[in-house]
Amino acid sequence: MRSPAAARDTDVGKLLVVVGLGIAALGVIMMLGVPIFRLPGDFVVKRGNVSFYFPLATSIVLSILLTLLMSVFRR
Image 1: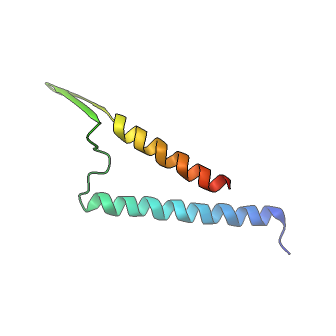
Image 2: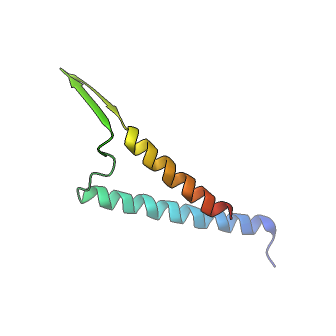
C-alpha cells in the first residue's frame, strides 16, 4: 500500500511528462513552419528600427483553452 505522499509524487511525475510532451509537440509544429502565435487579431506596429507586438487574439485563445483545460482537471 502506497502512502498519500507517494501517490502525489507519481501524479506530479505524470503531469510533468504530459507537459513536457506538449511542449515538444508545440516545438515540432513550430519547426514545420506553422504560425502558431501569429493570429489575425494580433497587432504589429513597426516604425523605423522599433517594433511592437501585442498578441490580443493569441491571449484570448490561450485563455479559453486554459479555462477549458482547468475545468476538465477539476472534475
